[in-house]
Length: 271
Image (cartoon, rainbow, N blue to C red; front, side, top):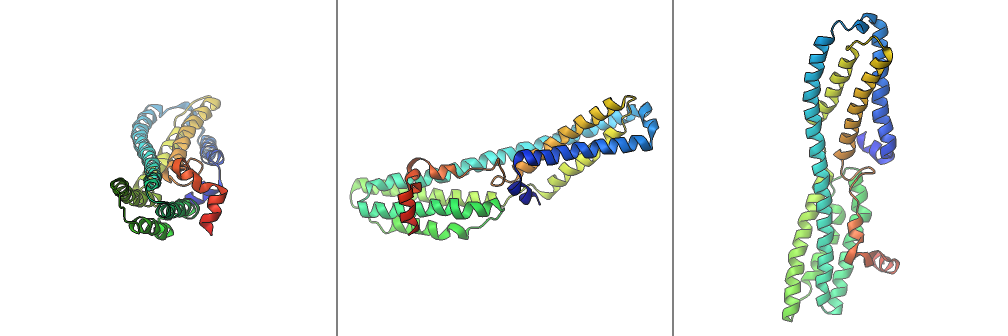
């Protein structure tokens, strides 16, 4: 359900659904409870409710802060992994410029096939939450084959060949990390704590009595909006490759890799 929502709704629409839905349900619950128990407006139990609400609010706030910081860090790490992988492929292409034209052309063709495979084949799979290694296995093997097929002869070629081979090993490692991150999500226990905490905190605000119905609804709505926005952040950040705020494949189209996306080069690669 989360994947479907992130893939089919914009962040603003999802925010309206999560935050707006949380606020509306909370306000409706407060109104219904106040009609059922009108004496709650007298605030006879405010001292007890205030203590419990403060205690639970502090605990829930710490949990949410931990979850959001963890997910934000995961998002940043994923962006760094994607940038490192794309940079590694670009460095292999640059190192291959020291090779003879035929060997360089083989490396360029293999590198172009790999970045196209990542962006056009593997990225859509990752948007569906799939950790699929097979999508680019053959493309990576072709890049290794293009390097291994060439035997450097001059000292300069040997230096650049060694650098390209070492960098390609790093690319393979970053690729594995990227695919692993695509299949990760927040542990079930933390999901239950995030949602369960909201189901405890918001109903507690219904019990805090105020004679002014407007102030009561303002209080409940403000708490519900804060909780709903926090839950929205959890949903949006939980999947680094899904949604409007997802990690972009732009690094595979930039720098030394940009020529591989020109129309003439694309047609050559596809053929």
